[in-house]
Image 1: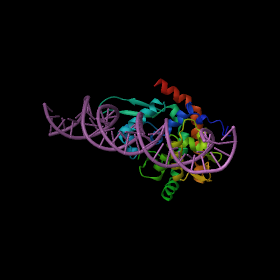
Image 2: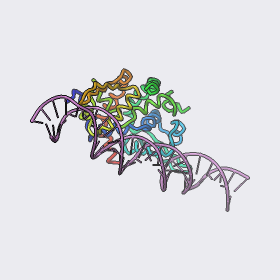
Image 3: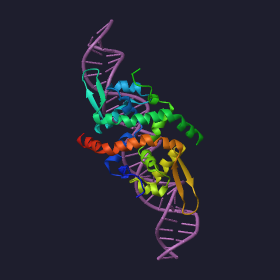
Image 4: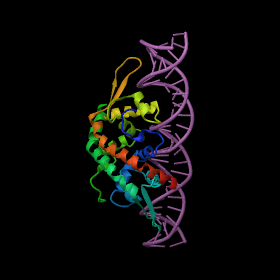
Length: 118
Length: 118
DNA sequence: CGCTCAGGGTACCCAGAGGTTCCCACGGGG
DNA sequence: CCCCGTGGGAACCTCTGGGTACCCTGAGCG
């Protein structure tokens, strides 16, 4: 219709759109990236990710979990010990996210400059 | 510290984080993708992108504009005629976004299944 | 016993994002 | 004469993202 390749992302009610919304989240990308190489505990992620609060991290992880990208393992005991890890599906996202984070690291300054100019 | 490669995305106040937040937006990815191959008018984007409202499209485009990813060209006249187009910086994002949309198209069903199961 | 501390999570509240509706400008066609 | 096509603005409403403060458990320790 407009000469764009299939990409049903443009359709409101399709799984692809849903999938985009899963990751189009301020924190989801950073959290997933934090789980890139191995499982981490809640508190590790808190230390790793600057500026995130406990509550928001929990929310984000829960959302990722119900979307099948992350598993939550409660080892019980006191103090609690909970580990989060990517699922197979979550790992398939690492390619795109790697590109995104690399882009961000390379072009962050340009974006900042545009903001200040604009 | 945690064995993760540099990735200063984890630092709260760095340009990379800012850049991630620019695109970690429900609509930004879809809108940018809609501008992938050539400039489009506001009304074209409305038709192309299912479920977006005029107001939100305008807001999203403005944000992308102030972040240096999109240009806005007003050709004047009545009815108005305005075209939006990717900047050079915006075009550098097409690689990552292509991967993201391809991932979404391939894995949307899996995410949906996880949601319904979880 | 009583105190604290660690780790993870939850109750409450507010600001802001997102959606809907209506309005404007104005040339052209029915 | 009325309405359409276009992009945008203003007003209004709802919903949820995020911050703060608090809770819970049991080990360790004096």
